[in-house]
Length: 334
Image 1 (cartoon, rainbow, N blue to C red):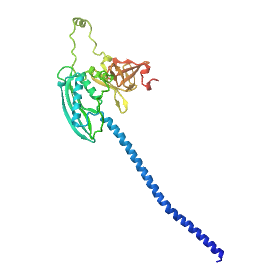
Image 2: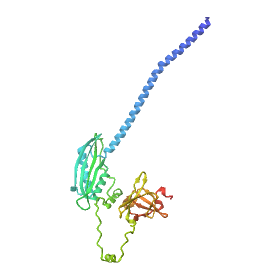
Image 3: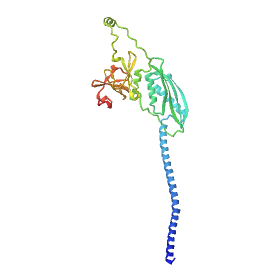
Image 4: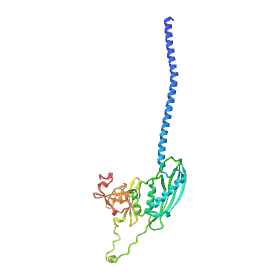
């Protein structure tokens, strides 16, 4: 091997050594840097989680303070006393007699982060006044609910007995808030209360009493002797057929019509003949059905070129004509 080859060999060997040393130095430098980058990323992830938890904590704290402002007090005894006083005020505000109502404390029942307390209430009064009381309690601005509500006939005419439980919460621990007297969102004259007047008008709790026919007048008796009897085969009029149900069966609406004379019920579907026309559909929209009353369903008939509606609970004689704008959207083009 001559001197030139030796020099070239040494040069190549030196270059390889330098490259190897460079790679080794790079590993020594980059490995700690990667470990530092990983620690930074881990720290940033922990910091983001801490910040997210912090925001969630303060959001939850704000919500709890908002709820706490709608509670009666921070302790069970205070909340029980104040809620009892509120019950008494609402009983009197509804026009009821305080002496006609009993109130027994309920609870406390331990829940997660709170105690549930309340009152078991039982009393008697006019139906409309009892509805006033329930409306005021149901729409109370305080954190509360009504449960186990039941009605029964009262001791006198027009009176009903009512029983329910009025429940509220006491937070434990309670957030520090400055409470003030809460104003109810509605009054007994608000439209939200007036919609319940239909319950009183219908007198739903009155037991069925068969109407007694008035005694015939002399004129009626005289006409009865001269008027030929009605043939027993004369078919009943439309007032003898009542829409008793508009429910669905297997996804298809059905019209159940009760024959009040024969005490039989017949089912009809879309396309069937009824009341001199054809059943078009069953309309389940909630629409006004009189002062303070709403109807949730009706059958729509097509008689000739006109559309008629019969509300659930009405007879065929009580059908009403519909304008084109009153039809359901799917039937306006028919």
